[in-house]
Image 1 (cartoon, rainbow, N blue to C red):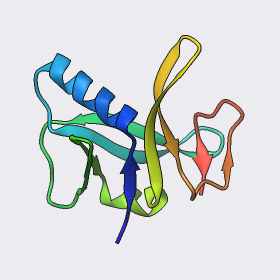
Image 2 (cartoon, rainbow, N blue to C red):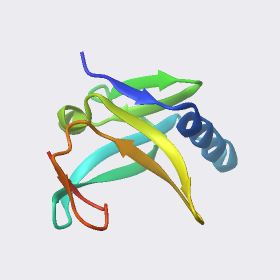
Image 3 (cartoon, helix red, strand yellow):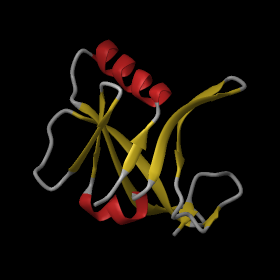
Image 4 (cartoon, rainbow, N blue to C red):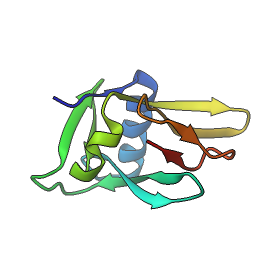
Length: 108
């Protein structure tokens, strides 16, 4: 059984963005080939869901994961962090073997 943990900070941001937007079921996460290390995370709003997507819920927020990304994301933690003036979702992914210098892509 795959796991994906959602921190309280990430859940709060997901709820906040969906409230501002006025619609949506949650955050959709997938991966795509990209960058110098191999893959990058793709975030989108989940306005509709497919039966194939895997649903994770915590702290009142939902995250939907594409089936082809599930193995790469299994055991990850979705967090929302502030670093200086930047605020962003961070994936603490135990499957990552290497990341590019800018942090935009990863290898599993």
